[in-house]
Amino acid sequence: MKTRRKFLKQTSLYSAATLFMPQTSFSLSKNTSYGVQLYSFRDSMLENPKKTLEKIASLGFKEIESAGSSKGYYYGLTPTEMGKTCKALGMKITSGHVHLDDKFEQTMEDAVATGQEYLICSSMPSDGQTIDNYKHVAEQFNIAGEACKKLGLKFGYHNHEYEFESENGQVLYDVLMDNTESDLVHMELDLGWVVVAGKDPIDYFKKYSGRFPLWHLKDMNMEEKVSTEFGKGALNIEQMLKNKELSGVKHIYIEQEEYANTPFMSMKFNMSYLKNI
Image (cartoon, rainbow, N blue to C red; front, side):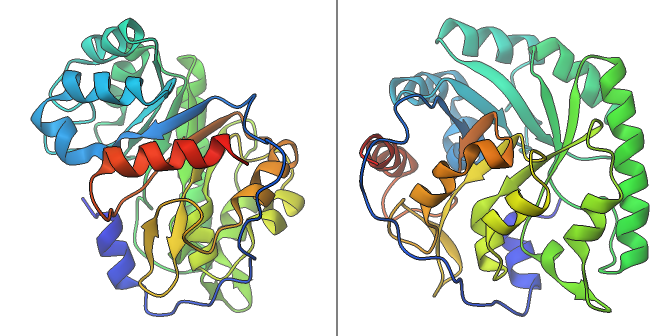
């Protein structure tokens, strides 16, 4: 399984972000319930998933998005255990990062057992930074979306930065957007990786209005091309939140992959930051 760090190493060109740093003003977050991507707590989740979920709940999170691990998508817990554990803590597992592979049928069944709403493909299922490959992938996504829909699930895709490369003047991510059915493929826009790619997320909110029901809200250190605490990087978080309605977002998952100290300290800082904008 390719990790986010591997994707980062594979990408050779990075453009400087054009977004301004955020300015604090009135509260944009008081009516927003934030979720968290469990990749942020990957080591702790592998060591003791239930205890880690308790600590996550204590930070004020209400929604959970799972990710792949060496112990599976639910960190050694059964799908049913995962759903019940979150519910007992006042949280809900609403989404999960998965692979579109030969085990996808079982992946869908497990997602139903957790009670989650979304299954998000976490990386491109086939290699090739070409228009033809992205059109082929779009077909796969439409088929997966139809299969999920039959089970009451919603299928989606999470971007990194490499999807914003171009071939013959066409941005590959745009090819993916233009060839997927909006009622079958629900995009999760990782705002941090969009900025790393030198693009403005708001341009995508405008071009594909309403097509991003899920976000990864992530600030990025543009010098090192790694995630950082909110307000310390290049993402204009306040401006993003002002454009929630335009994007169509329903679920905002905070994700941070690198830390100055611990993921829990960083997430506590991030939640405090959001309360003050």
